[in-house]
Length: 83
Image (cartoon, rainbow, N blue to C red):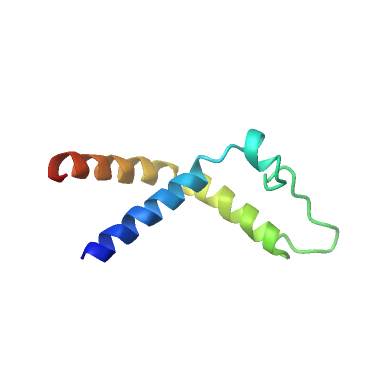
């Protein structure tokens, strides 16, 4: 059970780290913002590893915003009550 709790903490922290990345300040500087990616003519939207990383970051930032608020609140309450 101790290992399972640590895996949950690690996964929540990694998802938080992806969710708070700024497109203007950080992602654009390293060419990972969705606006900086423009696939070449004839290529699929997910042809390269870079495109997959960009799509993953955009998906996490879009889909996990509300669930992360709830999960972070539950973890904070859990830590305050049970320590």
